[in-house]
Amino acid sequence: MFPIIPADSAGGTGNEGLFGYGSNGGDQSITNKVSNAGVVSSDIAGVGTARAWVSACEYGGDKGIFGYGGPVGTPVSMTNLVSNLGVVSADVTGVGTSRSELAACDYGGDKGLFGYGCTSGYSDKSMTNKVSNVGVVATDTGGVGQARHGLAACEYGGDKGIFGFGYNSALNPDMAGMTNLVSNTGVVASDTAAVGSKRYYLAACSYGEDKGIFGYGRTAPSHVRTAMTNLVSNTGVVATDTTGVGTAKSHNAATQYGDDKGIFGYGYDNSSLVSTTNLISNTGVCSTDVTGVGTARQVPGACSFS
Image 1: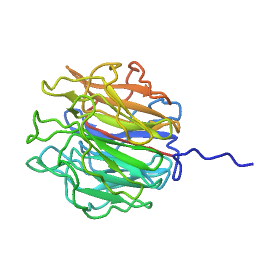
Image 2: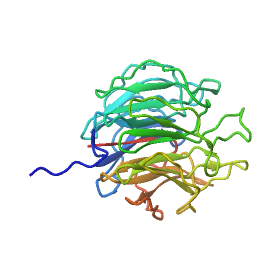
Image 3: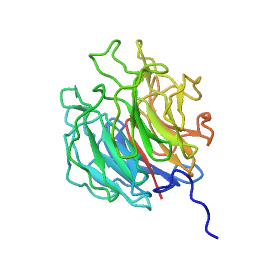
Image 4: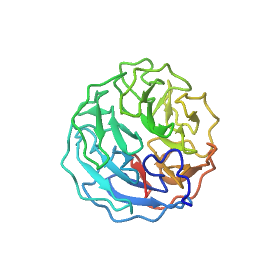
């Protein structure tokens, strides 16, 4: 008799993960695989244009995509597909408005969504770009909700997504605590009132097959780095702050692994670039720091595959 497929696998199960790109004083295209036991590999030679401020998500049930980003002030819209073996492809010509500091999540079991971010000159956007189940990126969809950058996104409920937090200089005091839910057809909802501490340059991933977690980042109004987390229920409800575990940091990334667990990695603490990671259990508990593997860097992207 065939095994029952987990709830989040209308597409795939996120058995392995991949951190990619980022900056350590110069833009990188290196990647680091995450095994189904949460072990991070050493650096894998980069493919595609070296850049930072990228975002990434799963698509097609078992593949991933890195997209957008670029050097500060000169964003791009190119993408790089990730096979179900974690192999990154060469650059694919960009579609949609070039921008960086955006976020991405999967939805519908086998599709993805890039959203928000800023163009050159830090003009904040709320537009989105859908990713089909074969990795084709669509043109811009009109924005919904507060335009912002430095936000994070993840899947929840098995086939839906959520964008949350971020930064916009027009906001008071600059940071956003609002979230925007994504339906299983990729429709973004209007702003949901803030829950938890406002912050930006954080990361998010799914866990437990149908829930999500936001973690780390810089808080308002003092811009202090933190290790706090906020859990997302299987109905998209964000919980209040959970006391941080591990070194406070920002500019990190996160991905699902092992079907039902997550991992936060890389970033910048209060004094240096790091490669440390923090594992998330299938009940949303964050572990203490795990010694870093690979090049310490900030603003990479991360997605699951396999």
